[in-house]
Length: 357
Image (spheres, rainbow, N blue to C red):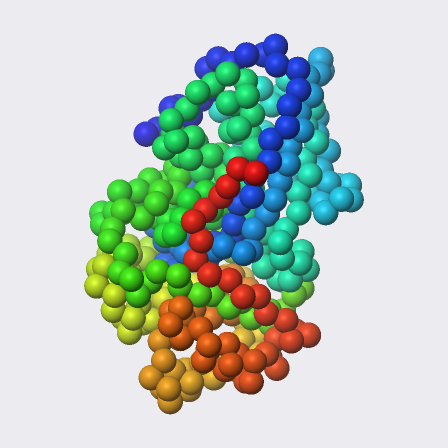
């Protein structure tokens, strides 16, 4: 598919008003996306676990209007939120050619997260995907009838233009984004992983240790831009392709030890790219490193399959099979919670994607 395939060519402009509501989850990348081209096109492919509990719930009420300007209000957890408006304005400007009814209506956007906004969990993936799904449901209200695969692909396509990783939150359990030779995938939208998934990776668990709840020192947008001219960019992009090739076989065979190698290497490589860019920066905190070292020690001493991954921040995602849930949470409570800000962590697991409410 090409981007022109997602242009809405006709719709019933006589619809006066309506309301739609979706929940959409966050996701955690196993092979990381870092670096993008124009229009949110990734420099390398990525694959992620879709989460279950960490999600955004968004309701959009739309009312016919006469002016031709974008018109919307944003309410976050019941309170009007002006801070979110610039990002949504930019999003509307990017997607207008694909959803031309945006100027026909005033939108009330009411959104909330199932996780605390100040938790240090990035909400752009869940938030922008939930909003994109609401817009797709409005298209349907305006008389457009889509097959499920087209609906999801266009929702993912729109979400990408709001936040790159948001395109991986529409479906589950594993989603690939970015062209590569080993999977059926696209730069334009995320697609459900088409390979076999061994039972070892079903019901995988993710405990998110909140090391630092503050706003990141460097935005992801700036971080991606720093891959332009990065001395190791070319090798990194090739590495991501290679790791995705390997991970496809690992997910099929159920090899947990090889899974750990790829996932942890990817996390550390992501932060290595930040530390070797110009300007350079470090988003890990001392407690991040302490947690990593304790995970390694616990894994060796207990023959465990626990591992970690990181986003572009200080928080640690602790990944482990469902079969180890009890002993890993005992370990987290006894040793790792002391390194979390205010002792906070979130229990999550792999989920099946977004849902209309």
